Image 1: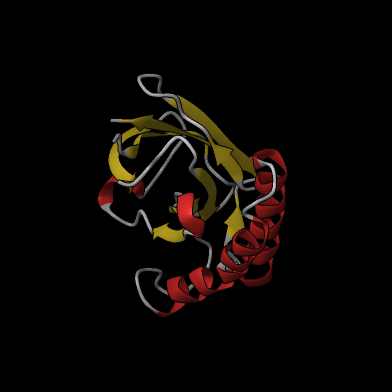
Image 2: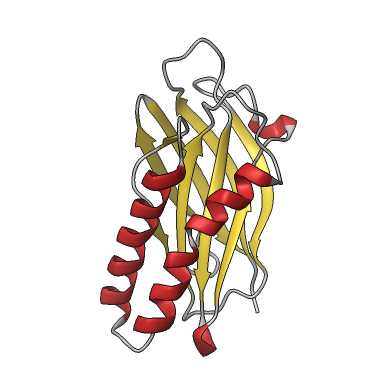
Length: 171
C-alpha cells in the first residue's frame, strides 16, 4: 500500500511581516472502519523556516503510511504569528483538540456520499481552526488532498499575503 508524503514546499509569496514565514500543516485523515486520524506537522525544522519568495524546500514528510484509495485527507496550512514558541506540546495539542469536532462529524456522517462528507468535514475543519488559531494565519481554507498513484499533486494554499505550494505524492 502506498504512503502519502509531502515531497516539496514552494514559497511563492511570504506574508507581509518583519520576519520570514514559519508554516505548519494540520491534517485530518479519514479512512475505512470509521477511523479519523488527526496529524500535525509543525514544520519547525530548518527546512521549513525562514521561507522567502522563490524558495523550494524538499520535504520528504510522511503524512499517512496507511493511505488507501478510500481515504479522505484534509489539509490546512497555517503561518505562525504567535509570540510563544510553537512546537509539540500545549499549543499544538490545543489545535489538535479543536479538530476533535472533525473526528466526531466523520463518525456521525461516514455513511454519507464521499462528496457530501468531504464538504462537511472541510467546513468543520475551517471553523475549528478559526476558533483556536489565535494570531496564526490560515493560508486559505482547508483542502481535500486526492493524489493518484504515480502522479504528484501540487496543492496551493494562499491568503493574508502568503502563497505556498505543497507537492503531495504516493510512494
